[in-house]
Image (cartoon, rainbow, N blue to C red; front, side, top):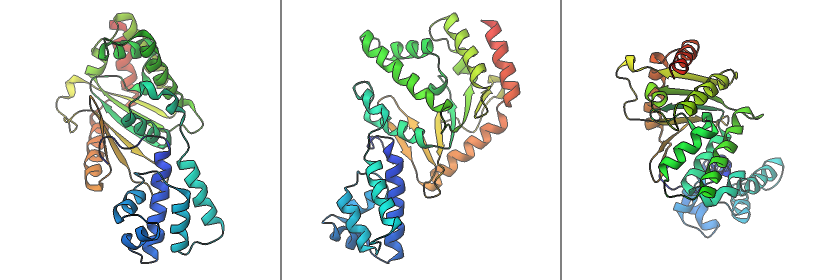
Length: 288
């Protein structure tokens, strides 16, 4: 994927639906060109549909299913139902005035992931930030923003954090460079509260907090922060999310994802184990 993909938690449903349509088309030996002709669309549109990068019209999917020989039964009904789910708006759409489209894509992916592995260099990860820390980060990044806008952004991030305690909570692994904890946001009290919150969050069975001390020296992820997302559906590949100042990259090419997976596995080997990471956090808190 590239920067600026369409947003929404429905993106995962679109990806899943697209993968299923591709499987059906290929099983029938039908080309993308012929599939496009059947719905009065181009070959490139079929390609984008199969990658989940465009919204779906129920009529188009119905016509494609007929072309692919799926004319009745549970599979047809299920796939048409998936179209409606894919077009449904996620809770985050209510924050559209403070949330760029490219980030809506990430929140949708985050909501559907079974495993989230992230490496942070400058900040505590957004899912683990306290309210005061969030506010300090947002005010620093948007010094001209009005108070109500800032508070909406704070509320958005707090709402995102509910994912970690929900019924569908993913396994979340956060590897943080020591610099992310040493760099103060909001002053000593804010940082003490933030570290205390990390200690509490790490008690959850689905949350692993790992610290990469300065003493480790160089490491395999010298390129900077990234997030690796894995999904429960076997049809969906792992994705890498790279956030930039005014946009983001979503990487799904297998060879590139493999390289990021290798980097994350290397970080796992050199970062402090969970128990030692908690000891490090306690010592850091006591220094403040």
